[in-house]
Length: 310
Image (cartoon, rainbow, N blue to C red; front, side):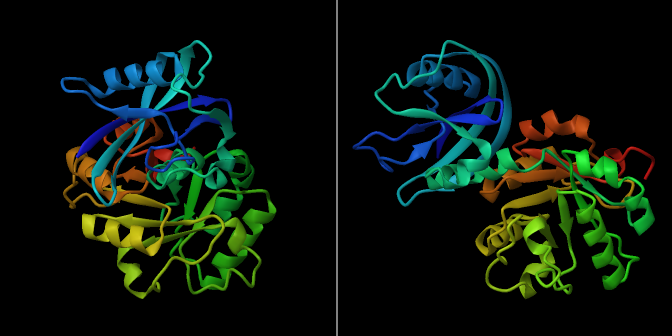
């Protein structure tokens, strides 16, 4: 397996991409700069060397974003991807390649290599994913709708106590209040008829894939699947999910008797998923850097993600 260090230079809401040269596989397509590790190199050493050679920049600040394995017809590559927030010198194509700054929201149509496509979701989706506690009511959510409307956090509305009608009405009220980042898990509701599907994300548990059809529905916001093993994560990727939730990293108060998978297992799942992964299990937003070192781009949870005790 080829180990590739990939750098995502970010400047505000834009990232730098470069065009593959003629004569190379994928010529003419765009990619995030980087290259393979040389014998004896660490990932960060390779990252610094490759960005200096390709772009003429000196990396000053970098942090892990995510890891993923991509299978080409003739080889397998591990993309070890890093966010680069500060550097010296203005980046330019030092090897004759074209470069350009691309808005993050335009990456989906930028003509990226297939191997780089999962990174788009990692850059576009929120870094924190908050699940509502089971005991919350509609009023609990409505009481903080203004905070939700201005929050960068993605919110999953579980709320098992609500009927489908009450659940649907709550979602529509939250959307009307300006809340934009909502994930729902009720497939029985006709969201298209409610003119809401284009503004929502669908979240499914892994076991629901068996009855979810041959491919993911065309929700504009995308689909996320909870997975706890490699078989399910591969099924979710083939089904068409954009992101996964994998766990659990640690023992949780919600499931105190369930043994956690641990960080090493999460890293194995994240590497093999081929999709951006949220880590879950006893985590808070403060665990983001730990999760990214384990190959996950983001964190999810319940108790540590709300402004009051859940």
